[in-house]
Length: 89
Image (cartoon, rainbow, N blue to C red; front, top):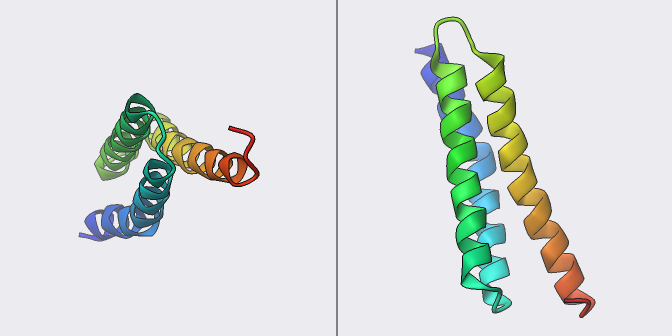
């Protein structure tokens, strides 16, 4: 039960922020393929992290790669928004 709580709490910490950032990137009239790649990366990252964390013997390879993918989506969205704010893009 504790593992399920950890998976859910980690999901609820990062996914709302990620989805909000993807929404804001979409609001800048970004390419739809770019938006779909961000969403797919977030989905793949969260599935990988959940799989790695939900195993009896935690598989850190899946867990770390899932968090790396999630943080990559957050960083790409943040960078894109900052660059679009200063009209570089």
